[in-house]
Amino acid sequence: MILARVVGTVVATRKDPRLEGRKLLVLQLESPRGNSRDDFRVAVDTVGAGVGEQVIAVQGSSARMAEDCKDSPVDTAIVGIVDSLDLDDPVRKEG
Image (tube, rainbow, N blue to C red; front, side):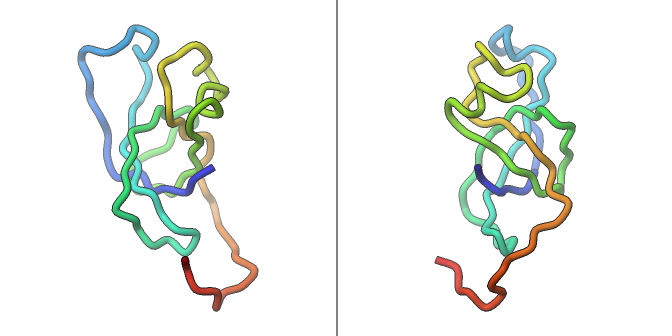
């Protein structure tokens, strides 16, 4: 699973029929401390996330197990909206 922030939306008028009616969002990956990384993904939204929200996403075969993604050409899916995140060691440095 990955943590990310929704930073935008994707509009695609022509796409695979199995993606019709699906909301596509642009994610910017984040560290658990909320630091943005210069790493982006396009993900199918399965939970009603919106721009600015921190989310949990899955990739690869796990993404195709998300709600309504079976047999779809999906590599990244948003599966949760983060309400809060608590770290056990607040002084631990990021790697």
